[in-house]
Each structure stands twice: as structure tokens, then as C-alpha cells.
Length: 137
Image (cartoon, rainbow, N blue to C red; front, side, top):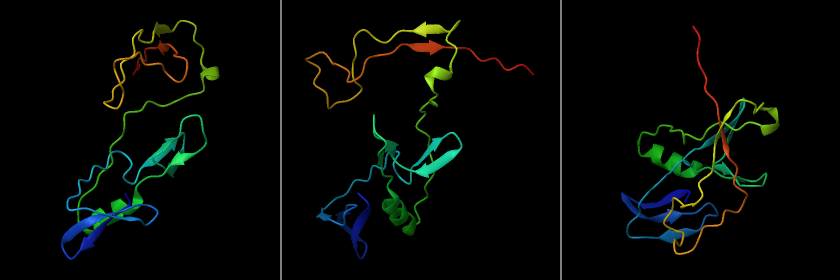
């Protein structure tokens, strides 16, 4: 959704990024993290919702909706997703790091999965390496 369809003071539906209007008697706005989203990689920053896995493509942020909400004087802030920084694994010396193994039984954190069958991940699982950082003052 990129915009709201408004008639006077009544919301009549939503408008998609390709300008399609979808009529609705009620609209629930759940912005998630794509509302005027920014990706950070190193010192680079650019507008994007997220990177599509195993691809150079991006999912777009929701800019139009942010502008519409601002027109109605709704305050907006920025939240981080808590996603840790990613580094090139070839740049790490793993000697001396602890290992945290992946779960043997994978339970997806989603209601869209069927739980009556084992979940097979699309990529091989990797263990996490654990390090401790101390700040000496």
C-alpha cells in the first residue's frame, strides 16, 4: 500500500504502488519496518525495505504512505529491527571462538507454516560463533 483513498474526511480504500485503487469500508494500517525504511551497509545508506535473499534486488520502502501520514500530522519515528551487522566470514579468525549450534528441531516463528511436517530450511544451517567483547577504559 502506498497511499490512502480519501473522500473529505473519510478513508474509502487504499492505493497500491502501481496506482490500483482498492475500495474498503475499513482500513487497518500496519506499517511494520518498511515505512520510509533505510538500509545501512557500512557507511552506505539507501532507501529500501530489505534485500531479497540470494539476489541483488531490493524490496522498496513505503514512501508514499509515510508522506500521506505526515499530511495528517501523525508523528513518525524510526525503529531499528535489531538485525545484527553482517560481516564477510572470510575476514574472521574463528580460532578460540565458542560455538552455538543450530537447533535440531526448527520451529518457524510464523503462523503461515504447517507444523504437522518437519520444516526443511532452504539453505544449509550454520553454527553461530560466539565472542566476548570487553571495553578497557
